[in-house]
Image (tube, rainbow, N blue to C red; front, side, top):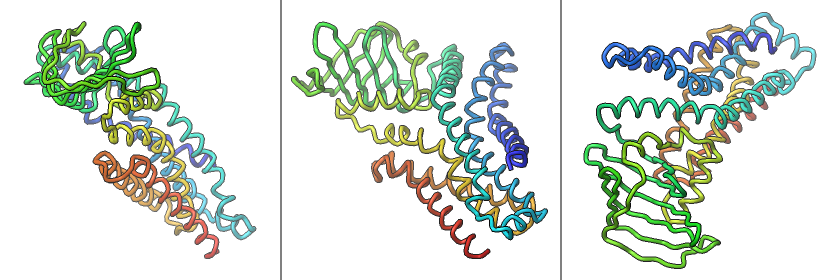
Length: 352
């Protein structure tokens, strides 16, 4: 079963990665031809995007490999012989489930250890290239750690006007208790930030507010200019689940709504399990499906993956807009598709 699985699994990863990187290639080619960027720099950028593309392909490739392996066995009547000898559907698909568990574990490890770092290196190279001419485009949910013990969160940036929206600054002070400064709006000029319409909170050692004061305007001297800020910023895609969880815990103390971040935090665990969910859903169809070979496997793979990711995207949007709790938004697709797989497995047993 593993031998039949590995061939289409590897081929699907290769095809998916080529498609995922195709859009990047057009832009990277423009960097070489128009902006005269060194080919070695562009090649490094492409290599930094490779792990992210591979991780995105793993769940679909797992489903594709599982269904094509079952289709090959079904076409040669091997599945029929196994079922006639008394083998049940759970036993038939168990090797594929074990492979899916291993691939889900690998996906989670890559998402925690490799992809955040490579994404950060890629985005930093992009930011530095763009900063040669102008400030980068707006990015939401931007994180930044300044020199010393200052942590920054900026929800949105207007690079043309140098305006910051929904700013949070967390200061760890060695001789005093921590302080949180929040502001609805701010402007950045060189190494000076001016915050408007904000609140200052002093916290005790347990995180409770001991002092609170509103301000109309506050000037903060930065150790670095706005360009350095952009060069070192981080988005959730550039952070591990642990790192993102630390930021969420920190920001909740200040009263900032972090639903969008909380959804991404849960998705960093839910999405790597997609490989296992896909096998639980698709394998019973492969066992009970007609002997139509690779076409059947390809069609079913595409239908399941498309349905899952569209459903996940819709629920993520609902979670980010506070219509659904973050946990519900992140985990509902996995629960429903796994339940559908169990029902299909039971149905396959009944129609033997």
